[in-house]
Image (cartoon, rainbow, N blue to C red; front, side):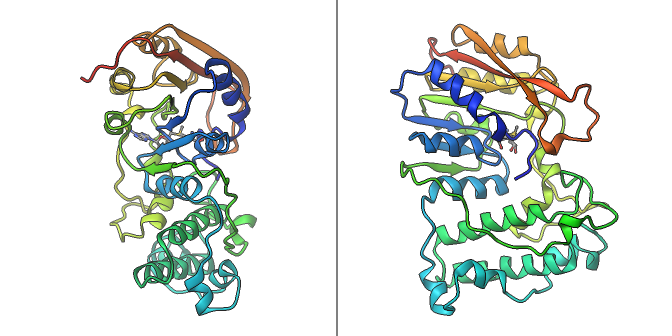
Length: 340
Ligand SMILES: C[S@@+](CC[C@H](N)C(=O)[O-])C[C@H]1O[C@@H](n2cnc3c(N)ncnc32)[C@H](O)[C@@H]1O
């Protein structure tokens, strides 16, 4: 998925830092601001038990599917409804007019999706709800299809990058038919799991060997930028407002210059872990020095860096630079955790 702050292209660098600072005895990796789950998935593949967490429900769905499912489910119940391949059967469901069509397609005056794709998404969303309730699909199968729907619908979104606005004319990729595809799953079968909590709440509930922190670094709230995906994931008929059809969303302290540092300090002080890795660049509401000083509360901080070209979702924005340096801040924890 095309996602602001995705670390997909930085995985080799992250793994290199991880290998430099760890000794191979680590078992539990926590990805506390997991987003698309790219990082957790990579470390799952390396054999670690991954705990992935995010404030947003769409991220929870992606992480739940990619971490908790190891092989394509059987879809035994669906196969009894149709001899077809389950995803082909789902892709051929006749479209219906529901919340997505009413609010995010031209039928409702907005152009996030073509009417045909919105109707297809409504049909899939409604079908899996019924199938799950009636026991035709298991919980794993439900999250597998929902994750595949989120990935597929993002591919046909009529936006420049995020869902803060839609384009006034359908672009070529938005005109393609919505097509669910099989998920690329990793087979490692450790007891990985996903959560949907505020990071500062979850930190008090978990212990891990490696804590990876990739918080938002500027004022752009993910809940606002991905509100359409949130609604498709939750399918909870929210009240929408304004031209873009924004729903209410949880506000992250990490997007506020007056709150980020306090939140980060509480997180770092409370972490029960051996290694803390933080992705945070030099254009954030906190400075590199701020992060290093916070990490020094638990040990001797280090800074690793690599040149980086911005990811597609960030293209076209008013940045001072096209290329940047990506940083990973690190501390080996030697001072005990404190709860504030
Ligand atoms: C920079 S993105 C993470 C990107 C991720 N590493 C990836 O590769 O896709 C930051 C994520 O933090 C989440 N987030 C923001 N505030 C949070 C909070 N207080 N607790 C948990 N997650 C939060 C956002 O929803 C967003 O998905």
